[in-house]
Every structure is written in structure tokens, then in C-alpha cells.
Image (cartoon, rainbow, N blue to C red; front, top):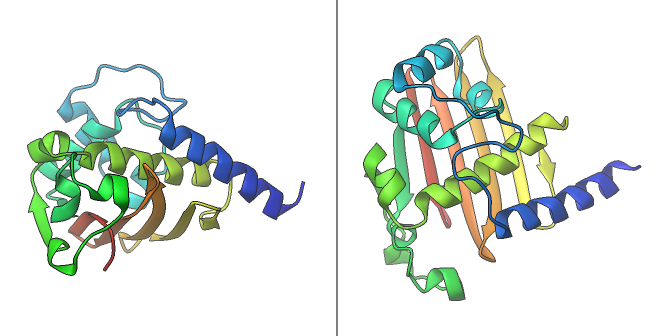
Length: 187
């Protein structure tokens, strides 16, 4: 099978995964686990974000919350994406003044609109791409750019995909002790 046919086949799988019900908390192959925040934090020690988000987890939501609360990772989201009933999710329309980035805390991450769902969908794509080989990939409705340097604690990941047929982007950035995730429509 050629590389291009694998990518096209993967694109169909991702589209189906994003449109179908999936666990908001786990990667496909994860085993049920009842770890508390301290256990999760211990497991994440010494790993950069690129490594963390390309390995299997029983609960991605908990991992993100631990990273925010224990490691000080910021989570930025464009205001337009904070409202689950916003017309953007139906029409894809927005104005530039609706694209201001705001910082949210761990509780807002799980409570604000579709932020958690969209983030987990993007991370599912990243996990599947990295699990099956190439770190960078492009399909019909997604694109993944992946760079990592574990020794320097650098992560530079950009995932462009569609959620409810609307384009969204998820960036994961880390340089030394500073790190953030950003969910946005456009820069």
C-alpha cells in the first residue's frame, strides 16, 4: 500500500472518529485506570509535552488538568470557541474581533463550551498519527506538524482539523519550563 493511500484511508478514519461518539478521556487503546492527580503527575515527570501527548493515557482530560495545575501549562482559546451554541459550529462564520485569545483554567477547560471535546479530538488525531509511524501527516481533513527535542524540553506541535465540519487548530508549545496549549480558528 502506498503512503498516499494510507494517508487517505487514515483521513477517513479520523473523520469518522471525530463525528462518532468517543471517550472524552481516553485514547482508543487505553486501559481503564483509576489514578489520582499525584499518580498522573509522577508519571509525567521528565517528559516533554510532545512525548506526553503521543503516548497512551486512560484519561486525557485528567492529564491536561494535571499539566495545567501541577506544571503550570497555560491553555489559551479564542473567545469564539468558548460558546458551544455559537453559530460558528453551524456556519463557520466569524469576525476578527471574536478571535481574541483568552487564558482559561482547568475548571473552564472542562466546562466551557466544546473546548474539552475539540481538544481531545485533536489529540486523538495526534496519537493515531504518531502511533502509526510518521510524526507529520496530512489528510483530507487534518494536518499534523510535529517537532520535539526531549533534551532541550521543546515541543512544537500544530494540529489542523475539522470538528463538526468547521476548521479548528490546536497548538502545543513548550520551551524549557514555559508551555501552553492553544485552541483557535486562525492566527
